Length: 45
Image (cartoon, one colour):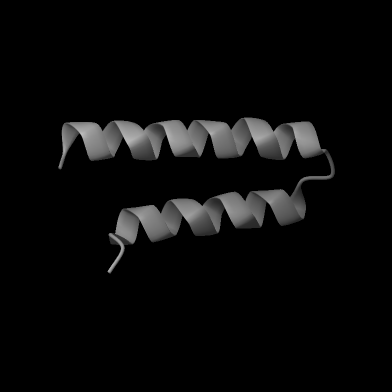
């Protein structure tokens, strides 16, 4: 089972990708969300 914060991050990224008209914005946001998720995994195992 995935952690709730990880599912929330994925949903936020998906919502942003649907609402964003530019692919660059989506890539930037998804990269930031992925980076934050990775940092949380490393800090809080």
